[in-house]
Image (tube, rainbow, N blue to C red; front, side, top):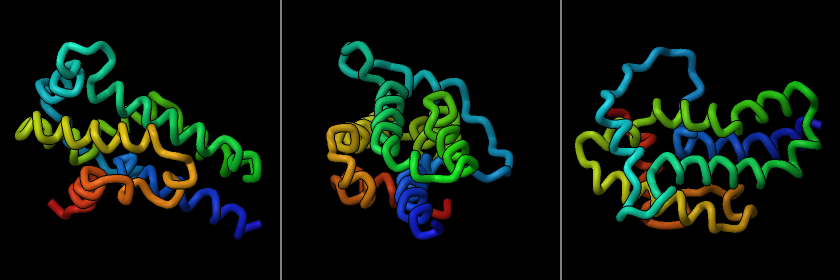
Length: 153
C-alpha cells in the first residue's frame, strides 16, 4: 500500500514543488508581493486573450490534475483529499503567488513571464508520463524555472 502511495504522491508532489507548486506548502508566512507584480502576471501576452501568466498557471494546474486523476483513485481517502485540495485551481494559483518566480517578475518582467509561460506551455502539451517524471526535463526554460525555484535567495 505504501509503495502505491509513494509511486503516485511522490511524482505529483515533485511536480508541484518544482513549479511553486513548488509552491511551498509550508506554514511560514511570506511577504506579500507588491500589487504591481500581480498586474504583470495578469497582462495578456501580445494582446492575445487568456495568454497571461495566471492563465498558463491555471492550465498547468489543470493538466497536473488531469494526469493525477487515475492515480488518485488508488490512494487512501486522506491522501486523496490532500492531493485533491492541492490540485484545485484556486489553491494552486494562491501557492504560485508565494513562489520566487512570481515575485521576481517585478524585477525582470519580460524574461520571467516569457520563460515561465514557455515552460508551462511545454508542460501542458506534454504527455502525462513525462510530467510524472519531472517537468524540469521538458525544456531549457523548465530547467531554468526549477533552478530559480530551488535557489536559496
